[in-house]
Image (cartoon, rainbow, N blue to C red; front, side):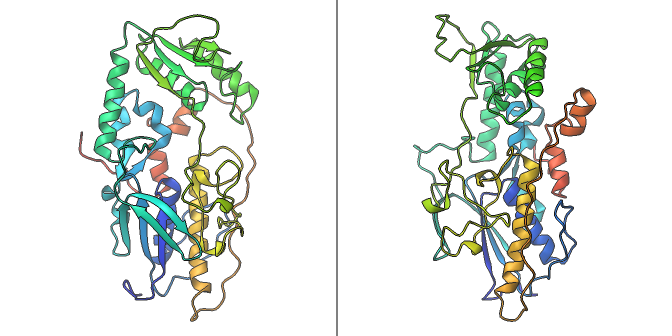
Length: 369
């Protein structure tokens, strides 16, 4: 197989969080002639490309951030050094066919199959998390932890009782039991906007109260009842997830900015050459809770179908079978709790080691910061 063929297919992956990274890893796996990673899809072997693709990964950050650990990272130092893994510390990406670019995509032209990007962001721009490098992220996390420790005389106030807000409040109380923690939420129960069973929401509220978190419900930040609250440190957890898709054609998006996608992970035929473009991860319009497991499945589905598409567009190869489709697996709700349930689900680092195990990669051990 050729590594530098002039007609080598070119693949651009914009954003290499778990979905984008797993798409790349699956592409490598197929190109190496290895079996598929474990999958919920009924995947059959895919022919190894005769010409290896050239893959570029474009990301505003210099590494992958374990977003599930956001609350823990900003509360306790236990996973700060590991939650952000620089791309340079991932051996699987050190291939001749891979190029890592750090920058922001400005526009994608589906018709011309071109992407426009810039390498340096202006000071007025803000990303979430704000850090774009691992060093800056480490400094931000440690500063946040220090602010919590320095708030002994006044409570730490968490604004917003969604999934992130409740996790923040719980983690602060767990690692700083002497600290007074107040959670303020405008609705009558926590997790009000989450598609979760009412029993789970009620149990979450009871658990927070049992652990010493003070709950103020049906009150907005302005404290419409006239009360005043002096906080030693305030954590805002009220923002709704909004996809950053302004670089895509408007016709590819729904009314909330999510990308309309087929079950093959290809764009819907509302844009030209839609079959040549794939969307995975949190920006995709897909039912259910946005979580790592589903993001990984999306990345794998896209990678397999990209290789199949490469085969069908090659004049030297016969037509491949139909593209694989990602199924909408319904949730089977049940409620279990306790230390063993937590350990099996999240380990000791909010699922970081579990996720890297699924990626079939050793968790890099970066130098202490």
